[in-house]
Amino acid sequence: MKNAFISFAVLLALGLALPVLAEDGGGFQNPKAVIPPQASQNRISGGESFPPLPLPATPVRRTERKREPAPPALIGKINLNIIDGKQISAYPSVTLDIENLMNWTNAQLKLRYRYIETDLSKFSFQPTELPVLYITGWTPLPEFSEAVKEKLREYLMAGGTLIVHANCGRPEFNESFIKLQKELFPDRPMGWLPPDHPVYSCLHRIEQMRFRENDGPWMSTDKDQKHMLMGMNIGCRAAIIFSPVDVSWGWDANKKPIIGGRLFDQGDSLKLGSNILTYVLTNYEYARVFELTKIYHQADLATRDQLVVAQLMHNGDWDPTPHGLPNLLKFIDSNSTLNVQFKRQTVNLDDLDVYKNPLLYMTGLRAFALTDKEQKRLSDYLHAGGVIFAEAAMGSETFDKSFRSAILKIIPDAKFELLKPDHPIYSNVFKVGQVKYSPLVASVEPNLRHPQLEAVMKDGVPVVIFSHWSLSNGWEQLPNAYAKGYSDEDSLKLGANILVYTLTH
Image 1 (cartoon, rainbow, N blue to C red):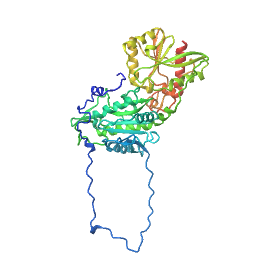
Image 2 (spheres, rainbow, N blue to C red):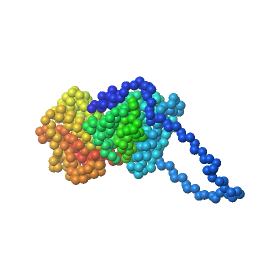
Image 3 (tube, rainbow, N blue to C red):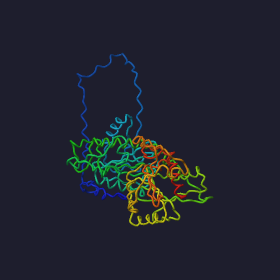
């Protein structure tokens, strides 16, 4: 799927069609928001009252227990009735869902976190205060000022996470949030989180979700077309996690279906919700360090010859590891005897020049697609002697499939072959025989000891070099528990060998 901005029409095309109602909600009444009447006060009759203390005796002083400190706040549910410090018309919302989710997740993880309510006028927008902001509703969101939107951008870039949940799966809420996300990050489109995303497996393995529309029969999401959660990435983490379907963390839909909405099963939703919070907690350190890490830049005026490594921009989240390639170039500069200065340059296929860019580097997190014109440009580049080096950030299966498919369209008879252990690419700078993999790979493939680089050959020379296991996550040297790749040290050694071999042969 092309990584374009998601419109509500796309949601409909992907099977998330909901009853068409007026934009103001068409008079929809959310049964979750119905507050039961307060029970009348139970007064004790005179015959049941307790006798007073006999006078003049005084009460015995009791030693009161010290109140335990409140557990740390993890989530801030945003009160949208106050924008820019001003009270606006009442924005309908509920806390039932997030309260049940926190209780469930604490029990699952044996932790003590809580949620609090806040508003955008008093919140500091510091992730250290609240790592997660939570927005829910079933009517269109109120308009945010440019100042508030800028603070939200800064909060997310600094490591915060925004979880958004369409109460009752209402389309008017979905439309308004998709519009807000485009305004916040016009250059960072949302997309469906793919089946291999860690949010579906970090605590509970979730392959399908049961859902229902109105009071209709329960159905299951398509295993191969898993359109359950959407996300927007900053680096290699989903900084925005959005469910356009009601994640019914606090609603018994078996007994009380919501007429006029679509929602997931509560049991499945609680598992998915606890996965989301587990994912956020595990990624917290990565999120904070990512923003603070400086990207290495070489001097503008080089004193040596330069070899340019061109990184291709494409529509599949092309730069999820922005610190990676610059760090690798710095590593090569410090650990090789080459009298050459490597330089990173970002390019579009339209601007690609084999004489200026002998090596093309690609990475990504999502599926991507090349136009016919782009395929022709890439084919001409390879036939002119250029080389493509690609690796799947995070070990992304969707990028892996897209890359192989793109190469087969350009080179129909292409075969991806594992490079033999004695290939010079494993020994030209560093001797790389056995390698260590990231903890996530090692837990699944404990016997994997050797590098797994693949190549497409032309006249015995690689024209395409590909690694399914991530290298760039290791180059970044950031704490990323969900990366499927090589260890930091071996990633740098392999990356140095690949670049030096490619640019010197």
